[in-house]
Structure formats: C-alpha cells, structure tokens
Length: 333
Ligand code: PBG
Image (tube, rainbow, N blue to C red):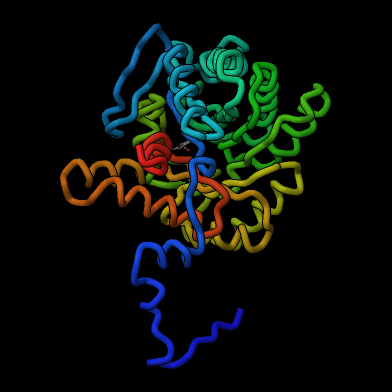
C-alpha cells in the first residue's frame, strides 16, 4: 500500500476525527463479542466460588457454576470458553495419570457444559502441569523435561478430552511433535472434527505468575520452563513454530502472552493468514485490574483499548479473562 495524502491545508487528518460519527465511519478494525474466548478455572465441590487472590474479579468455580458461566457467556455472544482445572494436590503425581482420567475435573466440566449449553464451543488445555507433582508441562526424569514420553501422555489426554466432547483442544505444553501425534490419534479414533488451537508461539514469561496461583501450580514448580517455552528475544523462531504446527494439522494458532508480543501476532497473520489468536494472560489481566482498582487508570477503557489492539495487530480473536465484561460493554449493558 502506498499512502497518498494531500499536503496541508488540503489535507487535514483531523477532518475525519471531528465527530463520533466520522470516527466510527473511518475506524479500520473493530472488536465484537464473537472475537472472545473466555478462560475459566474449574475446581471441585458443589456451589463453590473461590476468589483468585492475584486476579481480582476472577474466581475458581465448581462444575455446576462453570455451566452457569458458560450459559452467561453464550448469552453474551461469546463463542467459546476455555477450561483450566485446579487439581487437588493429592491427585498430582510424577506420571501425571490424572490428566487422562475420563472422570477428571476438566472432563466432567466438558461433559456438563456440552450437555447443558451445547451452543458454546468448549476449549481445553492439553498440558500436564495441573497434574504434575513437579509442576512442569512435561514428564520429568532426573531434572530433564522429556519430550517424546510427554507426547504419549498428551495423546491419552487428547483422546479423553475428545471423548468428553471438547470442540477445540489447546496444547499449551510446547513439546515438539505434539500436534502431529494428536492429529493422527484423533483421526484414528474417529474424532476427525475436533479442532486444535495450538499454543504455537508460547514464550517463557513472567506474566503467567497469577495463572500458576489460580491452578495451584506455583508451589509445585521447580525451576523455570525455558527449555520448552520460547525465548522472549526471538521472532523468526515463532514463524517457524507456527509453520511447523500448521503443517502438522493445527487449525488455528496462538501467540502467548499478548501485549508484549503484538509484533509476533502481526508477523504470524501476515505470513500465514491462518486463524490467529492472542492470549491476554493472567499477568496482563492483573496489571490492568490492579491499576484500575488503585484508581490509576480507567479499567474499562484500558481493557477495551488492549482488546482492540489485538485486532489491529492482526488477531482474529483473543483469549481474555475480561471476556464477559468486555462483551457486556460492547452491548452497552
Ligand atoms: C500451562 C499454561 C499456562 C498458561 C496456560 N496454560 C502457564 C504456564 O505455561 O506456566 C498461562 C495462562 C495465563 O497466564 O493466563 N500449560
């Protein structure tokens, strides 16, 4: 594109900014509720609502309240909800076997939502960390995160989630080769229509801190995730990872975290044109919410500005803890 404009005074950019009507007409991108995926935390029990201290406004919900939340989201026009289980520490083991238990918390929640709110798409998390006594996304032996053995576990997890009725699987583990293994297992098992939204470019980030509290993984985690999550200094590598995951059968791809990586969103969208998502992660939520609660910024405006920013950067959609609030604001409620 070659921008052309008349020199001043023939050209005055302020003409198209002078009223609400002109600004609306000339706006290039917009945000709608249909762009949002809402991540929610599931816990055991009945009618339990438990606040997450580092994410004010976010709660862990027991299964029947998650179903209610899904119904609310569906009513607001949010197309998908993404489930993250808070697993009882007693169920966390070194072999992570609870991850593929058909009756685990995540799988029970998937079934309950699909039975009662069939119109909302249910996305899952495919990674071992909520079930791992060592807090890592992969199986660990002698301090090393094992790639190929982890994939076998992820495939079992994949099939249990697909059997439970998941619409979109979200592998967030960053092992190499998992997309191809998951895709071929799904084909073989007759789950040919289950989508994969790959966490393709997931960076080793400090912004995941509040999430690890929310799923109870902070205490368990020893060390960091730098041998499998990306180095924040890399950008070309993100394109290679996205290319790899798409060629192995991912339907959609994600960049994570969101705000510090908008350049990656733009490059990924321009290079591949695939459905591209950003995850506005827990630490980003906490920053905006925390500042708003202190009266330092206007929380609603800052929230909407960040979400629009993802669209402008080329994203088709955003995973955000703000989803229901943003959807309500978009409706003027
Ligand atoms: C782990 C996982 C993480 C998030 C989603 N899945 C954290 C991590 O990699 O340690 C982070 C989400 C957030 O911070 O909101 N498989």
